[in-house]
Image (tube, rainbow, N blue to C red; front, side, top):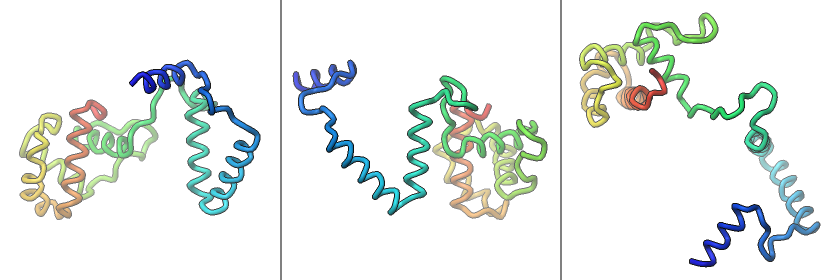
Length: 160
């Protein structure tokens, strides 16, 4: 326990522990391994490198300080919520969701029959999807995924 506390304290102070010094051989070895990875998987290596650079330098040109990137699907959930609520999507004209999609019709049907989706119980997602997905001609799995994501987004306040 004392050892774990000491290691945590040194790491928070950015102090090197005994045996953690970087040697020239370790630097060359790390560079060779990175080059090998670049040769074997160039796309994922470069995207990981880009992500690392942006995390290390969050105030790069075109980025805002202190901002965090939204989670995957946040933009889709926001646009779907805005379409159901009748508000235009933010951004460029014509950048909103396609009107008349099966998912849009399904979410509108759920909101019509069960009230606002921000108050919809997550435990009822599967049952309601089984009832209403066939009416919107939507695959049951796609309906469950869309409704669950949309309900979670509205309840978490990311699509208000």
